[in-house]
Amino acid sequence: MPTTYTPDPTATQAPASQPDPDDFPLESLPNSGEGATAASITQAFKVVGDYIAWLKSPRAKASSWTQAIRRYKNALLQTRFLIDHPGFPAGKILQWNETWDDVGFLTSKESLGNGPWVGRWRYSITGDPAGGAIYGGQAAEPLPNFPFGSPASPSNLRTPNVVLATSPAGTALSIQEIESAANVVIDDDTCFTMQWDATILSSSAGSPADDNFMGVIVGSLLAATGTFGSNLLPAIGFQIGSGQTTYRVAYKGTGAGGYTVLDTTIAKSADRDRFRIEYYGPNVSDTGSAKILFYINGAPVAGSPIALTLTGAAPLGPATARCCFRHADAAILTWMNVQTTDFRANIWPGDVAF
Image 1: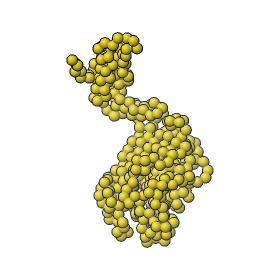
Image 2: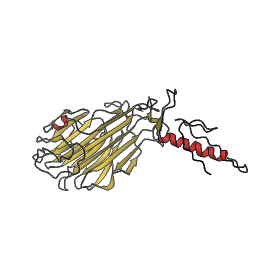
Image 3: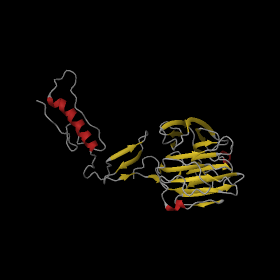
């Protein structure tokens, strides 16, 4: 009659050891021609069951002070994140989540100028003397207290958000931009990810100056004028402009020349969309070459092997990643609405566990 066995994460099934965070199951399997016994069969089932039981309820191994409970590694087996012996999340990585819920975001910027705004964010309004508007809104509030009338508003605002809008009172190109402080030095060992939600009200084909960029820049655009592409900063991100109904990816390394722009063929929805960028330096890339991956609404849309490394190059010095959202238009009411934004990066080469 079958025997019931309840797998035990603390059991030992010789020749296997007790389930351990850094070990794999060791099974004793009969060779061809050997007589199968209950013990020769049940050992393999029991050891697998014991390890599965440990996975269902991971725990530290007593007195193994330096051993992690769980490790998560990239394709090069570099530890990026772990659960340490005390049971806490660990890993020397930079990570932040911007939910735009600091009350300081409710203080708008509407005049020409640039400088610190709230937390990690700087602002810049340049171009037309009429200025523009940069301000925060709360969840479910469609463009509250909008200074330029009552424009079409995004729906489904499930989180606080920030709005960048042009004034219809101007006569020339007006640029509204926010960028984070320099997040991390970009070298061959750097990997970073950025993801966010956004809704954009673009111009019709009658406003060719409309220019929207979302992504990462090397350097700064504070006080910069002109379209995004005219500034020629190394950058990776998404663009959409006047008369365009699909998103573009744009990227430029540290060499001469302009941006490579590719049409993703992904249509801008009437509601919000999700965006994600992954950057891999050569020493953290699966292939050994720098690579960028772009995603919209969870689907990969483009990839490119370019490096943003700029160590020692004047006047920028070491390359650093700044998150950037930029909207520009001329004398027409258009806007960009950005919702929850997340950033992650390793801050140490190789294993970044402790």
